Image 1: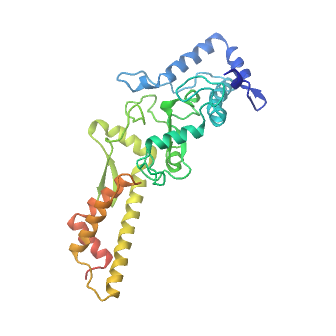
Image 2 (image 1 turned 30 degrees about the horizontal axis):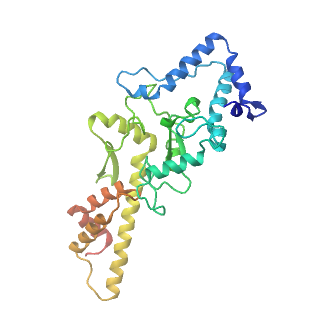
Image 3 (image 1 turned 135 degrees about the vertical axis):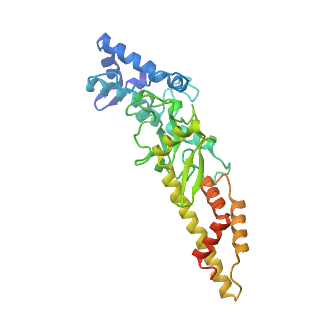
Length: 310
């Protein structure tokens, strides 16, 4: 830790920043200490009757706050890249500490749905493609709460689409300091609570949940714009399936064969649905689409759109 504090950033060592904080008036240090204790007790804020999360920074002087912020974020911005002075289990170490690459590798291994290293990976937030360049996200933004820069309960690997505006970005994940109507990736996970359903008139996918979880689901949807993103995927896969059938129809006609019957189209949808893998990206959205297409009225309308029947 001593070696870590000797690092220089913008012409100032981390140790000098720590000394600046140590030299603050007693009243300011007490306010900072109280804020640190409240923020560090993140799990307690998800218990019934929890006190409000602090929404204001504890130091009124912007320069003092920036000193504290830079010191805390250095553990992530600098230390996490070069190696933090402790192992993954928290054991202090002088060399070979935890790195950003270690975290990314470990997270991907734990959350990989298909153990095959060549299989597609799924984003734990949206269920879409994790992508080649996923982001280490701070669930509670480190800009406002730098103390949580390398907190295990505050880090997760997600796709770049989820992490960037207009989706999560720097949005708060609480309501005025209350987490009661919010999910949390570790402390109050939303999986198995958030349900997807198809709205026929709007041709859209929407999020829903049991009444007790609906406020949390609504907040999660607003945070990540899930309904609109899932609807886009729904429509894209719908277009793909239409394209597949049109191609098969052209082949049949070229060979002088009869057009697809309603039963054959239904069989195609059933087989496609049966082949969906829960380990693939967008499985939940594609499942919703398969159920929608298997409805007789929807299948008949689909046939008309495809011009497969007269």
